[in-house]
Image (cartoon, rainbow, N blue to C red; front, side, top):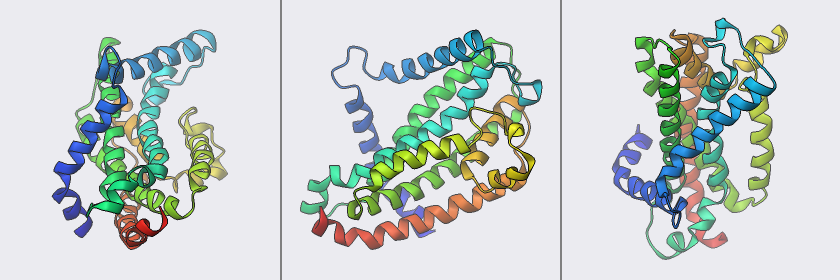
Length: 263
């Protein structure tokens, strides 16, 4: 509970860092924040062209859509926010060395604002996905209103891991490179580019231990299929998210006093 109270207490400062991060990302460009809309739109068009027009990949009606590009885009949105936050967290403490050395600064907010910044971009992508689904005649179930609950679990899981990665990288600088390889491996072990039904039956037990599989499947269940996610998978996600969030915060706070001596 203490970790959540701490997060709420610093919500205003986190919001300021998120705003500054989003503004800095497109500083000097002609259309600024509008690039946040263009990027996911281009990705969706690219997926449609490559997978639907050239490769002619299809998924069955049991996946909620016959359009593989939409199926893929729905899975990539939470993954991109997750992977971007972890990748950027590996260097965030070192990038803000001046703040940590010279002032009393709550360094825990550094990984958190990166996660929130990624979620803002994901929400823009979700808005585009919803618009395309409406345009193609997709009927949404009222269950889609449960999506924010899944998003909160996703955020808690990502923040917990981001704290661990951000703190550990201060002492083990190679972790940033290891993260890139690890995330690529994790991406292909999560059924994002393929339906989980293609995974051999004897290997599916491994999927149930993958929290990001639970996130992706929850998105697809609520948005595309209009039915509740599998409860065992959702329970695993809930336990992993809350445990990782609390433990990640404790690990970061224990490492934090030594940051100024190392960076």
